[in-house]
Length: 157
Ligand SMILES: [Zn+2]
Ligand SMILES: [Zn+2]
Image: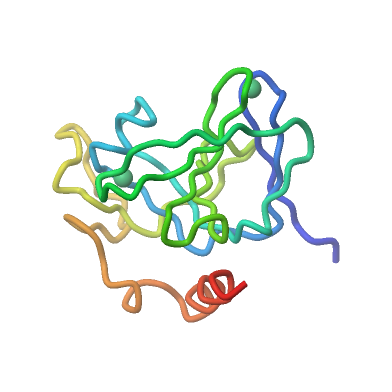
């Protein structure tokens, strides 16, 4: 069976990418940083091995962006329309992409968890049955064994 590929891109069409794997874990993040970065009510990020994401056309420009931790992140954006496709945080660097799942052509991946709901906007009602956390969760309690192995493998490379 052919491997399933998940394709996405920016809005001007210059930067197109594909993921060869499903996200290990998907965050719907209600922190104020994700809100500002996206200009929307929350961020929707799926963690995928950096080497499972490749450009199929165009390129990205990596923009240094501040984070709450102070360690910063790099956001990969289309150089033309500046739509953000994924971010990388210092801890895992390029080994793990935090893919902005709304940039997929078919954004089919639902969140595994809502995080930082203590700062969510008051009109968002989380009655969707997805686990939610006022801040963050304990990874070993939430992630599948397979996803933890994928994450650890990615960091070893
Ligand atoms: Zn673009
Ligand atoms: Zn956030």
